[in-house]
Structure formats: C-alpha cells, structure tokens
Amino acid sequence: IWMIQKRIGRIMNGTMYREILSENLLSSARALKMKCGFVFQHDNYPKHTARATKEWLRKKHFKVLEWPSQSPDLNPIINLWRELKVRVTQRQPQNITALEEICMEEWAKIPATVCENLVKTYRKCLTSVNANKGYMKKY
Image 1 (cartoon, rainbow, N blue to C red):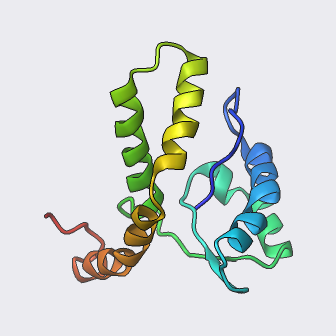
Image 2 (cartoon, one colour):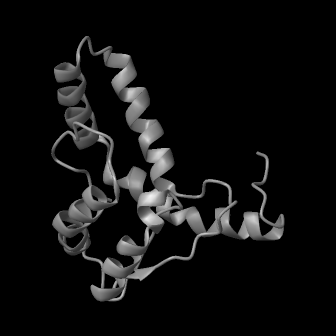
C-alpha cells in the first residue's frame, strides 16, 4: 500500500489521479515485491472510473478488480485510513502544517503487519458479502 509523499492542495480530478498512479503505482508494486500481473483495486469514484483512467490502465496493462457500483465499501485501505485517523486525532494537530507532518509520521509508524492482516482478512470479507447477497455481514 502506498502513500503519496506530498499534500494535494486542491480537489483531485481524473488527470491528477492518473498522474499519481503514473508516479507511484508501479514503484509501489515493486517495493511491495508484488509479482507481475497483480490486480489493482480502486473503487467507483468518478476519477477512478473515468474513460481516460480506464484507458490509461489498459494501455499500461494493469489488471483492475471489477467493482460493483452499489457494493459495500470493501476496500482494505478504508480500515487503514481509519487507523491513521485515530493516530492523528490523538495528537491533535493545530494547523495544516502540523496535520501534514503528523500524518506522515503516524503513517510511517503503522506496522506492516497491520496492512498484511487487512489483506489476509479480505477474502473472508468478500466471501461473507457474497454469501449475504451483496450485503456486509453484521459483526
């Protein structure tokens, strides 16, 4: 899982999203020692599903996980963002500069095992949603 090393100072659009992918996706896959042919996952935000984004991913030969439009949020990164949010909130940043610094510090402190566990439990989550006809199982 990768983290953008700079703050985005405006609302992200499809062009910016493709630039971020271009600068980070392949290098992140290599750093994570992912094998050729890995499957990339993102959800149905318009910048992700834009024709230009789909075409860019196709031209670069990236496999993309199909994502149903009305699915529960199954993306493991959501849980990772929650972990980061809890850590950052505890430190109570007082301004945007402090927020940015704290985010970077806390992101770096999240153990790799947290990411590994999110990925390991992903199959169970998908199986549960499938068994429940598209709905999340209540825990």
